[in-house]
Structure formats: structure tokens, C-alpha cells
Length: 375
Image 1 (cartoon, rainbow, N blue to C red):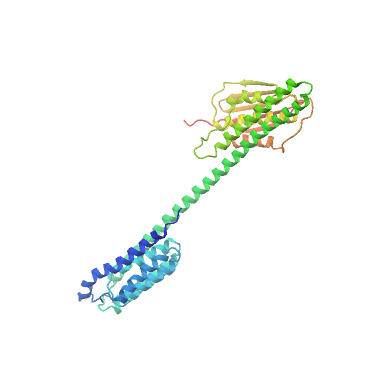
Image 2 (tube, one colour):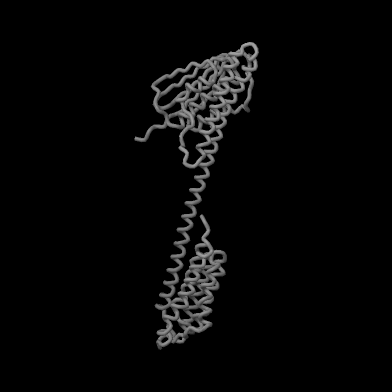
């Protein structure tokens, strides 16, 4: 929330000061000449007392209790000296509202109780024309109570609004945290896969560049394409963070053939069931799990053949990636977060993932449930 400019804070005190002085001059004639009132006409001291409360309102947000004390005290002195009733009560009402809303309820109720006791005593025994009686006292108490009720209602409404804003802010922070986690996971998968591919192809090119330059050229071409792909995917992921960017997955199973081709591995793809549109989260998770599994094969089982099976059914997508084991031990480039990352992706969707040895090779199998569409 933006703070109000200084001039806006001065408008209410200015209005209250002009109103209390000018309106008092407007009502004083009949109160001064009415035998049933006999009030004192406004003089310099009366004007100063009428302006004391409005001047105190200038600091009502920073010092609400002090403002309330000055406004109520100057008003009681104003009435006690016999000046006219009426407009001078505006600044105490505003000061009371500010004190209650800012949380100083005890001070507000105490000041209002003191003011009520003063008016009962003054009108019953000290005023030039006494107006004793329980009906008068009850009316004054009811009016002052109404002011307190309105102030308390305003305080409760503002507290509810502040609580709603706090909850909304926490929800926005939670969503932003989840989005940052998703982006970090996306960037991990993109970088891990493509950098592993570049590393393997670079090693192949160095090994073959002297004896088999044509095959080395093929490896270098793969490196060029992989580096281009990783930049493209990183831009796609980072674009999600920009204002107005579409909240759509950066990759899905419709790009699986492209992924297989870039991997440089002998891959057989099998589709079981009727392939259909998937929810974005499931589609993206399936793609990333296959990508991470192929990355692990490239790192740890170079030369292995891979079978990728996608099994579609109405309730779940099953992704199975099985390799035959490499001809030589591979080199690990990562920190061992591949399988835990895949498992977290599956768990985030309410699914499961297993990663176990399968013969000489390895098998990753994930079951990703598909949410039922609302009827």
C-alpha cells in the first residue's frame, strides 16, 4: 500500500478546523441569546480551543493517543468555559476513530468514559442552565456509544481486510516459491541432458578426429545442435518468468522424437494404448523423466541400447525407460540428483517412480496419474 502524500494528511485537520470555528460562529447567536442556553460567544480563547483539536489531528496516525487526549481535553475546556455546543465535537469523534482503528482501544474507551462523566456532571451541576435528568444523560450516553460502535466496526473491518491481504500475499509468495522451484528443476533437466550430450560427443570427436574425421564431424554437428537446443530451451524456461509470458510447459511428449534423435543413442520407442492429449503437468513430467533417464544412460552406460515405452490409459500415463547396459563404465558428471529429481516430479503429481537394475542395464518406470475431468 502506498503512503498518502503529506498534503492529503492535512486536508481533514484543515476541514475540521474551519468547520469548528465557522460553524460555531453560525450557531452561537441563538445559544447566546436563548434563556434556556446562555452560552458564551466565541472569543480569541474560544477560537484557540476550537482549533486545538483539529491541529492535534495532524499527528493522529503517528500519535493517536496524544491526539485523542488533546481533542477531548480541549473540547471539555471549551464546553466548561461556556462556549457553544455542537461543531466542536467533530475533532474528538475523528480522534476517537483514529485511536480505535490504530489499536488503542483501552485509551479510547477511557477517554470516552471520562468525557461522558464530565458532560453528565457539567450539565447537571455546572452549566449556567442546568438540564438534569436521566433521559438527557441516557441520550448523551447513547450518542457517544454509537460513535464507539462505529469506530469498533471500522476497526474490525480493517483488520479483516488486512488479514485477507496477508493471506493473499502469503499465497502469492507460496506460488512464487513453487514457480521458482519448477524453474530450477526445468533448468536442471535442460542443462543436465544437453551438457551431458555435449560432453559425450566431444569425447567421441576427440577420440576419432585423427582416424575417422567424418565420424568426428558428425559428433561435432551433434554438439552444435545440442548447444543451440539448450539455449533455445533455456530461453523458453526463462520466458515463463517474464510478465505476461504464457504459463505453458516448455516441453512435452510431442517432442519426444526430437529428444531421442538428439540423444545419440539407439532408442526404440513403443506406444501402448491410445495416445491422447495429456494435462500440461503430466505431459511435461513424462518428457522430463525420459530426458533425465536418457541423460543417465549417456553418462553411465555409453553404448547401451534403450527402449522407451509410453503406456496410456484413461487414469494414468506410465513411462518406462530401459537400457541394456553399456560396453564400458560411464563417467558421472552430475551430483547424483537425477533419480531423486525424477521421483520428485512423479510425487508432485501424486504418482510413483522406481529406478532399479534390470539385467545388465537399468530401468526407470514412472506412473503419472491423470486427474479426472470435472463432470
